[in-house]
Image (cartoon, rainbow, N blue to C red; front, side):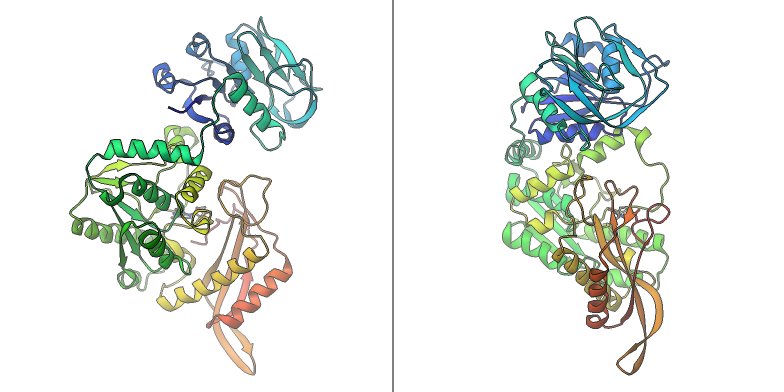
Length: 520
Ligand code: XMP
């Protein structure tokens, strides 16, 4: 078992970020609710604990508390923000409510040479109301800011530490060093969490779970299903059968790439089903966005089912569930409340089919999934691609979906992304940190609108196309990307000249909210 750190979640919006940062320090970390049963947390055999921040106040009735087992374990503990207050409260120190919330950048100065914080003065990110007014017995102040006399504290004997600021956010430039010192030096965890070690461990556990049985996988062209399939294939080879349903709504060249990569490069037994005509038929005359999504989701399941039967119904099914999905569904209070659109993960589990699931990415963050994919030999552009909705181009082809309109949209979309990539503006990956620039998602949308234009000496009456590109960290809110005018001009010229049937290009300048990223 790899060395690990247990992170207890007290409800901060940054908790997942702590886990990602610890893993960036190449130490496996796992998230648990603050009140998870002790046996569950200790089963991980962690080398130390991190207590996250959170919105509560320690003296409030029912406020989350630091559990006793962490102190009984004798292992090092790092409390961050509320985690520091919970630590203080549990060990007999005093936390006081403050009238002013300290939020934003602050400068801290170390007071004492210690194993957690490098000596000196540096920028950190604060976000707290309450503060420590008396550290518990055994603790000494390690750093102070103008507003927080105890910005960091430590009991060097017991290896307990508290930070009032957030080392996990990018606004604390030295934060990674601090977390690394905690997990590697203070907890003594070996930095061996790498794509290669993840693959080795996954391969062993997949083999154990599967035994001699046969496994089925649905490949959609998306990152998660591709990496999950490649990983399971690495483990069990020809016991795996993969199915790729080409519904005709992928981006330019994507369907061919899926077949090429899985069949030729990786040698996976992949059945590629050309279901384009059936999907087109089912979608004929349909313009309502929700209806489109439902038809595609349903049709996919039925097509997949036929394939599964032809393969003699393997007992197990690969699912590309990743860690944020697992964490979010175990913490219902932070899942998104209102359903704006029916989300379909084409390639998801048919509800009425009985399979035992294999979820090889269940403990991985998206950036780890991508790194593992690359290490398994998947092409870079496949694993680092921008997110693409399950129903594919269907939700970007407004109005009726026809093969001609899809081709038009695909061609225009390829021109847009090609020009962005050339300028280095096609940001790859979803776990984007605020420090990276470029577009988090960029695509074309074909509108159900025709307008008059002039080309040469002739009047045209053709379709209009919108370009959508956004910057965002989490896809919950987004802003439209301020793309250079020259680039937009070039894209517009190329589309109107090169794509038959489009004579007008517009740029979407709406943020989310009030708009959504996709148009349907
Ligand atoms: P919206 O349009 O809701 O999109 O602002 C937010 C993010 O979700 C993606 N998206 C989907 N992803 N199945 C998916 O797997 C879907 O049905 C779906 N609809 C939207 C969208 O591309 C954006 O990244």
